[in-house]
Length: 208
Image (tube, rainbow, N blue to C red; front, side, top):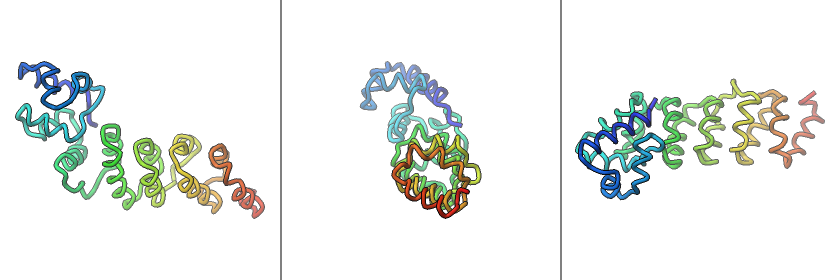
């Protein structure tokens, strides 16, 4: 798993070895000194485009810079593909994306979500990614998701991030008997406008 603390420590060592202040490095990268300080203590991670600039400033290979954070091979492949603007790896491990999600722009994650949607993804992983993805991307993931592991706890975490269309998908699966009716209790505060659908399902005996 990519470690921002170790990555930041490496940036700090490179800067000190080059006898450069945080302000001087910030000027070269067109950033604030505070941004450099946050990188070095591991509180934030540079935009991928900044990684290339950092590698150029210190005259090191991009791979060396990325590997300072001790990423998995999959994480290295993902970061490299983004930095070099090449196609993402054909097979993306969802755990690698989850680990990198806090470090990547939503636009990049949304693009990767398309690939995950085609592969199919467990609902529990969508719960983890939902706060970083656009509504459209969450919807696409839900369309091909496996719901085997969904429970009230997962749904409680996921539903605040869902738009009306995504909520309808889950409600329809409950009405069709694909998901347990008990999930309705968790959904009710968020789907008051769908009460007619629920009432119709009760009349038809779905929840009896």
